[in-house]
Structures are given as C-alpha cells and as structure tokens.
Amino acid sequence: MERRVVVITGASSGIGAALARLLGTEGHQVVLAARREAELKEAAKRAGGEAIPVVADVTCRADVERLKDTALNTFGRVDVWINNAGRGITRPVLELSDDDVDQMMNVNLKSALYGMQVIVPYFQQEGKGHLINVSSFLGRVPLATIRSIYSAAKAALNVLTANVRMDLREQYPNIHVSLVMPGIVLTDFGKNALGSAPQMRPAGSGSPMNAQTTDEVSAAIASLIEHPQSEIYTNPASAELARRYREDVDLFERNLLRRD
Image (cartoon, rainbow, N blue to C red):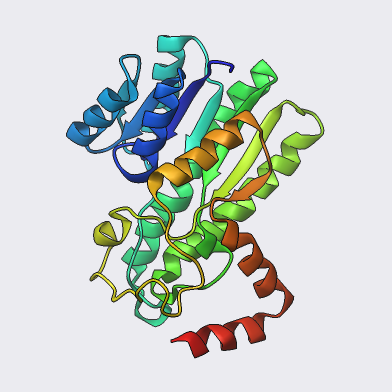
C-alpha cells in the first residue's frame, strides 16, 4: 500500500472523523480540518500520532489556503484532498429564507470550490493528485424534500466536480477527480441541521434503502483512494435508485409517494 498524505475537511465528527481514523490506522498521514477545536483534536488523536489538526473555517478562502500550506509545510506534499465539510437544513423550498440559501451554499458548495481552487493548481504543478468531493445521493434524487437547499447545493457540487474533471482529463491524466455520494448515514447530521429535527420514517416503512454507518462510508472512500473512479455511491442500492429516477421521473415520484 502506498502511504499518502491526505487532507480531510469536516473532520471533527461523522464521516470525516471515521475516515481519518481508518486512514490513520492504515498508515496514511492525515491533516484534519474543522471549526470545533476540542472535537477536532480528539479526532486527530484517534487517527494516530502523525495526524495534524488544523482549526479552520472552510467557508473562508484564507483558512483553506492556510490548511494547504500547513499540510505542505508538515509533510512536504499532498496526495489526496477530500472536501467533506457540510451541513444540512430542515426546510421545504417554499419556506426558505435568503439566509438559509446563503448558509447552505457557503458550507456545502463554496467550501468545496475553495478547496478545488486551492489544491488543483498544486496538483497541476506536480502532475498528479486526487481530489475527492463528498456530495450526497440527495443531489441526484429528491428522497427528502425537507433537505431542499442542501440537496440543491450538493447537486451544484456534482456539476462543478464533473466540470473540473473534464477540464483536467486530457492534459492531466494523473490527476483524479472523484465524487462520493452517500445515502442515509448514521451520524448527528440531522441533529445538527438548521431548523427543527424532522420526523423520519422508520427503516423498512417506505424507506427505499437502509442507513449506513460512518465506517461503511469510510471504507468506500478508502477503497476509492486506492482505486480512483469518477464517482461512487457508497450504498449499493443508490445506483439502482438513481437509474430508475433518470429513466422515468414521474413514475419514480409517484411510486415514492405511495410508500408514505
């Protein structure tokens, strides 16, 4: 296994913290970024002695630049950059405020844009690297309308990821750009979402796919690092659901409503 230097944003909890722990135990050198200092230091501790915590707000371009510089100054290189920071919201479309839209776009889209714009020029200079953007299955299929603008931000992230991949593909074949789309994941994401906690349907009662653990999602991302692909769904059921949605949107939505 090649030992890599991996930068992970949104690493103080959830998928980011679990991925840091997994990669650290596999011998990779990880640089972790998040706003919450205590939680971030704990995540770094669990990822191993070489893990570097960097308190940063990735909605601030200067903080993202500082994150890259810290990684390069500490380890001399960056092999993989994972834009994982994100936050949800519990608000249907017709109830969204301007502030709701701005917050969701800043956290879920602009933070990843800053990451791309900071690290890709370095990868171009080196002629290699791996950019991974963590999106959501909700950016493809509207299974949870209460996540409205969060899903829209992730859909925009999907498009930006595809465009930067196309921009790089011909001239930089050794720079990989990947999109990761988890489905339902057992984290505090819902509890930390803006707005009141939604009433979730119980598993098996109209739910088209089961929830995954952060360890399962992390294992999928770790495999992606070893074997780069353009995009992956971390839940095997997601790809089939997305295919059915694209084939006949009206039929898919009618069938989904019948499950309620």
